[in-house]
Image 1: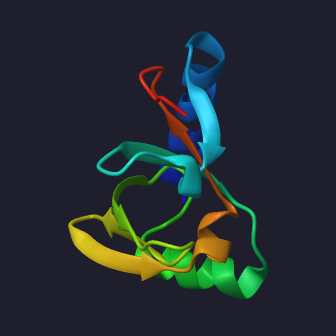
Image 2: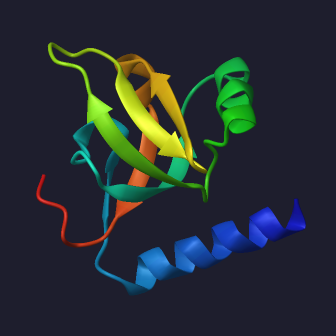
Length: 101
């Protein structure tokens, strides 16, 4: 737990000192690796996502998204995960300044 708190502090310091973009997971480009900053859901969904590896400080990659506002497939620690677009809208991520959105 202490290590995770230190990692979050380092990420926040890097955000203040760099030119990065903050956006929700649905706005990311396919194939883009991002760092999770916040999961703005209820306690049950936060626990479920944390058990799957999606928590603040985690690095995830958007693999693909379904057409017509369907679910989004992400890669977390080498495992593919599919989450609904509504849940993905509540996940705030950080990407580098090369993002196009």
